[in-house]
Every structure is written in structure tokens, then in C-alpha cells.
Length: 107
Image (cartoon, rainbow, N blue to C red; front, side, top):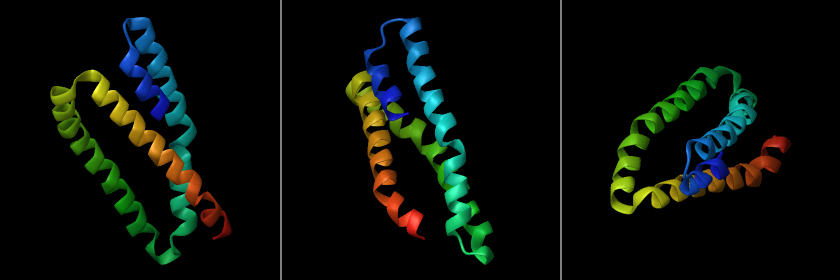
């Protein structure tokens, strides 16, 4: 997903935008079920509802804050700043997930 977002910085046509959206969508499809599975496996049985609620809240907060912060970044730095930042955050998140993978598998 991060690569797709970063590639959006180079979009100059509708066709190129469609390609980047296809990359984002592929990333979303690949990752969609992973987070819920990890959450369910790591949460103690009696706290699964709280873990799931907090996870949902995090997504809702991101959905609210992203347009606010993204539009400010777009205005301040233009499209390259916005899309490279979004791509960088996505790549950093992926690196973080890879880094914690061994601990999750051990648990």
C-alpha cells in the first residue's frame, strides 16, 4: 500500500492513477484479514472485545484525522509532499510489522 501511495506522486494521467489505485487495493486485500487475526490471537480471551474496540477506534480516528492532516500537508507542501509522506508512513508501518513478526509468532 505504501508503494502505491508513494507512486501517486508521479501520476500524470488517469491511467497512471488507476495503476496506483490497483496497487493500493492489492495491498489492502492482502492485509485486510491479517490485523484481525493477530488481534484475536494475541488478546486474552476475556479482553478480546476491548482489544477489538480499541482497534476499531484507531481506524476511526485515522479516518477522521487523515483528511485534516493530509489537506494541511497538501496545502503546505503540494502533492509530492503528501504522497511521499503517506507512502513513507506506509513503508514504516510495514517495516514495523515485519520487525514484530517474530515476537508475534513466538507468542
